[in-house]
Amino acid sequence: MGKRSVAIQVTLQQQVLLERIARSKKAAQQPAQRCRIVLLSATGQHNEAQAEELSVDRQRD
Image (tube, rainbow, N blue to C red; front, side):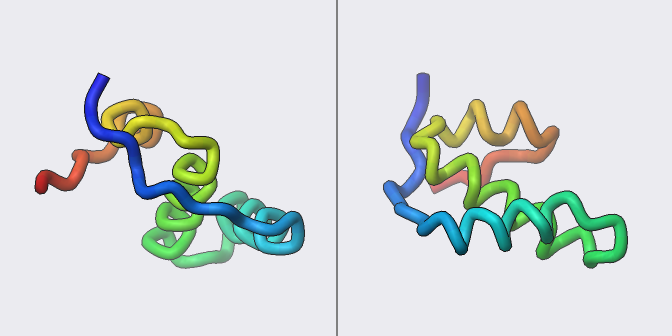
């Protein structure tokens, strides 16, 4: 696989908030998408896998 995302850690409280925003039907889509990316990054998923799962282009170095 490709490059791993930056290793991040989120607290339970942060995770709950990120999940709430990511699932919100009223939130703007760009912040909601970023929340989904942060949540996947916290799992240590590769950038390519994140891009595929979210149907977005992976940012190149």
